[in-house]
Length: 81
Image (cartoon, rainbow, N blue to C red; front, side):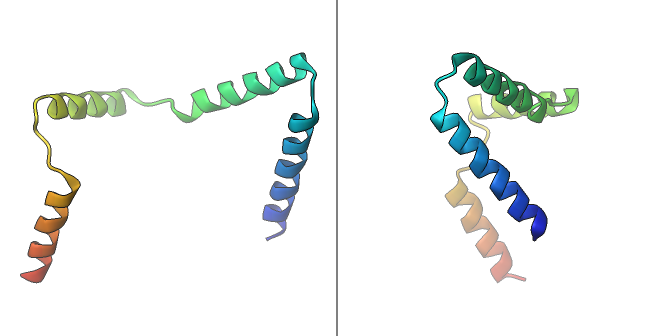
């Protein structure tokens, strides 16, 4: 729980410093850090990229089911178990 408290304190401190800053260089530096951090979070493997592309192609060709249809099928399947 202490780690969460420290994380919350750091977040609150950063939020306040960003809100109160008019230093464009500082704000750009913070933006760069966030942008760089976001890029590393979304680095996908070739296999993941391929799976996403395949899914997009299936959607484009109409080969998908609506959430409601899937839920109906699952409820019917579960009722027969």
